[in-house]
Amino acid sequence: MNIIEKSGSYNLGSNRVRRFGYGAMQLAGPGVFGPPEDKNGALAVLRHAVESGVNHIDTSDFYGPHVTNQLIKEALYPYSDDLTIVTKVGASRGEDASWHSALTAKALTQAVHDNLRHLQLDVLDVVNLRIMFNVAAPSEGSIEEPLTALIKLQEQGLIKHIGLSNVTRAQIAEAQKFTTIACVQNMYNIVHRQDDSLIDELASQGIAFVPFFPLGGFSPVQSTALQTIAESLAATPMQVALAWLLHRSPNILLIPGTSSMAHFNENSQAAGLTLSTEMLQKLDALAT
Image 1 (cartoon, helix red, strand yellow):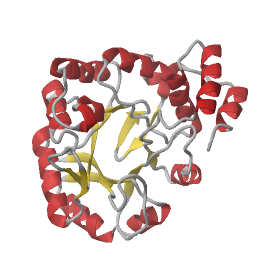
Image 2: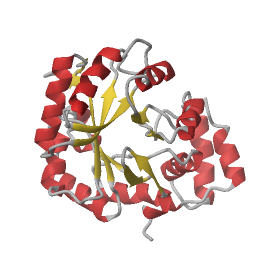
Image 3: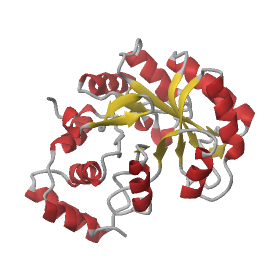
């Protein structure tokens, strides 16, 4: 068993994926815009991730834009049968690298077709609807209109499963009135834990939760506490933070991203870390 297999597995749509996956966002240029500084390095990281056991890659055509999907295709096509590629729609990029909402039926339809073309796929495994009412955090409001547009594309056979990103509990409940939700992707980490109860509710329904920003926003005090535990394990604070997420709930799927092979290898060691009950209690206490 390799280190990534030690993370276990969980259902994502109709596929079973390893809980330690890979997020492709950082393969694009600075600010998730433009091409990577080292294209060959980016291709190598993708190939290495899959060779290491990753079978869940998170991406979007608005990363770059188009850059990460084109890199994934160049590095990994034809794809292995067990690889699940999850993409997201609902945003677009301005020429100045700004982020904009793109939740109209026309924009979503174009985005799905762009993802299919750039990934060279006939059908997308999972498409997350990224709600952009507030770019930085979930914000209340009906998502029926954009969700209906995605459901129509699903009925056309272009999407297997639908997920949600940057959403509230009320929006998840609304969505479930119309379709089955495969996963939820929100910001969550060891100190920013507003979705604690939501994760448990989703776990009871067998729905995956995919945290983004899993390694940031810590205060100096929290970072010091994390460092102390990491030193006792001969690990890095970031490895401990990732390991805590794996311990937090079996439905959590990790997608840490990096453009560095060495950093990928460092992150993946989190899958083999065992945290004691005492360590978990101390880490739980770091929540804001």
